[in-house]
Every structure is written in structure tokens, then in C-alpha cells.
Length: 123
Image 1 (cartoon, rainbow, N blue to C red):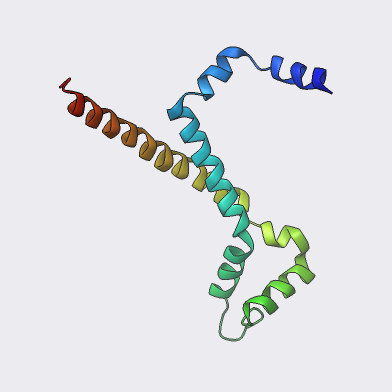
Image 2: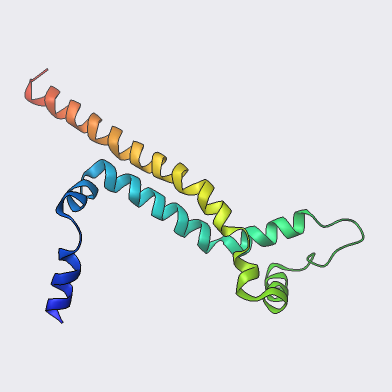
């Protein structure tokens, strides 16, 4: 079992491991993954929101309580109905979340570094 683990980590080039272990790169990647996960978790509710927004006066199929409307969506479309449009949503949100989280961590480090330099009298 240990040999399989060693082989799988050995197949990843050291340069790649070093690159993604840098704090800025890791923050960007973590932000992108977090954005994709959060969008995927709320995807059924986002889809329900869209379905309720497009209802015309005569069509009120999804003018139900949230739980009943989600149940109706599940019965009629299944898992694919819950995830419809999620790929497009993730393509939109992953770069946004990556830049937002990565920038936050980058500037936090810059600010901390400037504070420490000022405290020890380097600048």
C-alpha cells in the first residue's frame, strides 16, 4: 500500500509541486476550488431561482414552496436538473474567486511584511 502512494507522488514533477506550494499560487488555487464548490452546493437553489423568475402570469409551475419546487424539479429532471447551468456558473466564478482570495492573501502578506519591517526598524 505504501509503495502505491510513493509511486503516485513520484509521478508529480518536483517543479510542479514547488510551484503550487508557493503561498500566492496556493491561495489562487484554493480560491478557485472554493468558488466552484460553493456554486455547486447552491446550484439547485440557483436553478430554482431562475425557474421562478421566468414564470409568466399563466405559467405558475414553480410557484410553490422551496421544498415542493425542489421535489418537483427532482421528479421531473433528476440530478441533471439540479446541476443544469452549473458548469457555466463555475466557469464564471472560479477566476473571480481565485483572484479575490489570492489577492486578499497576497496583500495581507505584504501588509504584514511592511509592519514587521517598520517594527524592527528596517525601513
